[in-house]
Length: 203
Figure 1 (cartoon, one colour):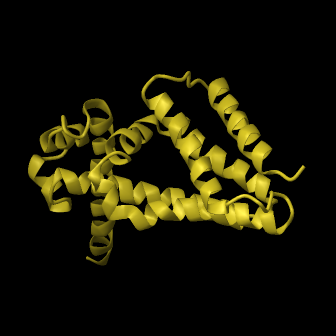
Figure 2: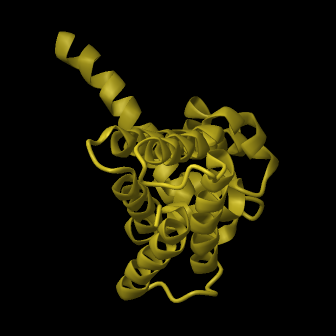
């Protein structure tokens, strides 16, 4: 009996994850507005009614996809920020994490860019979104304090410019406007760093 009671939460978590992963594929393929709850259930291989056991609506599914994946991104960026590396290397780390997400999980990036970044769902998560900019701002400020980056630049504006550049590259890949092979992803990393660090670094 004890073993069974322990296994139930794990099974529930696995089922919930199965539904969320299926939702990402469906949203990426059909778009949020074109997707139906039944499509997600079918993709996950679960009964239609079971989805409502975990989520009250399609909107909650999308909000959960955003919230859980954004928090995972923040955890990774906080680890980069905490590394014992110079500020320019930390920016390199942030750039790699964000741009390589396209190669690691393109469906998820499609959903985050097309269905979340430009939708009212984002307003409910504004504090979590702001934290990415704060991580970048703190890295820039650290570089300024240690004489690596120019002190005459506004660190907050710099953080928005850096993230804006990264997001627009992801958008270019999502919309098929930029080549996105392994070599091109590596080239995008180098270009962002050359442009950003070229403007930030003390000469």
